[in-house]
Length: 597
Image (cartoon, rainbow, N blue to C red; front, side):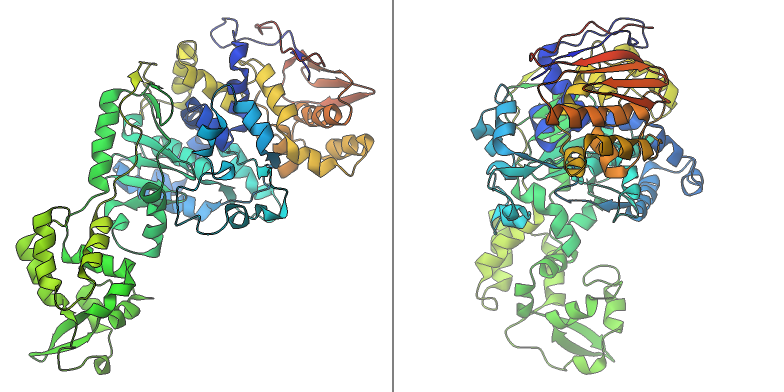
């Protein structure tokens, strides 16, 4: 246990003293580590990270790239498609369990006990017992994630990265590109859609489930982000393996949090801050996106997704005025490696690729002719979600397909997904709409957010996620640094303290964050670079865990940093910050509010 005191630190841009309510220190320190569980317990953090990415200079530099500059004046949809390709080219999906180290269940359950019960947490997190997605959890959960090599209580920190930390994966051994896990990519896409794609915040809804995070963009028929990809409505229903993976979360999992620029709604908390009209609009638009009319194109996609039914269908084409037939599964085999698809506008081009010897001059017994089914669906517009539509289709298929009822049930499920969204039986409170425009500059946005942060918790937390140490209380940063930085401890466990200091001094002095913003110790440990002040915090983390009975004092005077413990350790900083941090042992976390120096 320890306490942190500091002084002579600058205040916010407004000149008012920072007044961090220390009952919220767990929440504010979570803005630096952003684990999946922290975001579930403190849902304000999700949109705070988006705002931190919007304030970051990294995404604004993307706008200056030639590939984006030449799209100036084009619509958001066109820009989003280019953004998707850019992210596909520049970012990897990362789910390395040990990127941000390990913790254990009991530690995490104890930490979050004041906010949620163990039973509630088990409903939300795979590592605490959640098994909602049976598709994903048909194997033992610990074995699935490679955790079976650890003791039963050991779990990884699944942390969400800022855009700077995502970009820094290029420095990590084994990575040649930027990277991030699903929540990081969702936050990146939301911020980039706003800055690069010109999508207004009001059209961006973040959707979190226990195992996934994605965004719904309210453009055209709707677009879902899914890790590095974008999924349009037509792609959602194309029956490919990629679309099947994209559907996994919304088909099988309960949505835990929806976040928007007006606020959030949580599946467990009775209070919500999202604008109820915005939430109803989102529910309606998402429902439209997740449902489609039954056309032959959709039916062909269904057969693509459910190959077990292909054996009941045959393809017919005219050849020199005579009908020719082939098994449907044979034409689906031709699809592999071809840009053309069955049932869409490229159907005839696909048929042209088929070898003539694969056709026969007679109808195949026990199979439905797809051309006749297409004619029926065009004429009748059968809605399989309604009893009348199901019966009409059953009459067409009955007698040929022995498992017709099961096929129709699967078809119903294919054309309609009912997302398990948080209910509207909440107490809605206005937490303040974040009103920034795609036409504003970065400086204008930061100035506006600085003005409203005293009245808006999400915005205030954004400056912590942004790592703006000049305008934030340092205590949450220190708490995160010395309590939740296991990678730096693991990396230095075989070194003496003198060797750790020597390793830090010899490390590159370039910080991942510009100006007065600081990286956490595990970011230095993972990427091998950091400012002298950041190195001092890493060493403080090591010293605290090796000698918990000894107090530490960190003195920061512009370029000079001194860490006092059993010995003194000096570092050089380019951050230009000033202050003093005392890490003591009495369990209190008290400090004066930082003020302008």
